[in-house]
Image 1 (cartoon, helix red, strand yellow):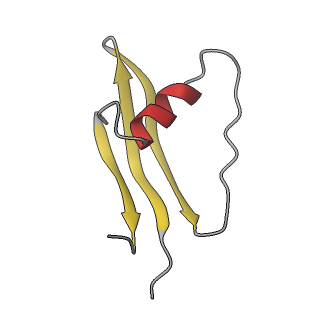
Image 2 (cartoon, helix red, strand yellow):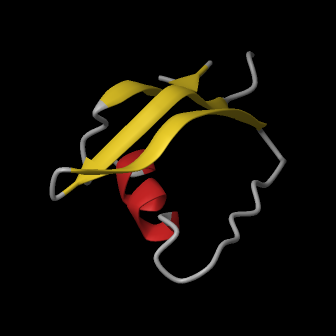
Length: 68
């Protein structure tokens, strides 16, 4: 069995015509956590909405590698 991991590659997200996230890449392996910090308005919720599929990415990919 291949462990599942969350992978974001060169992710960019826009809201209301404004780029909020640009060129973000990371991998979170099974059993690990990603800590997301930042000031109010930095894009934390926007990133979470994109990762959940509630907001489309302007560029890049989000995938669950090793999963169904």
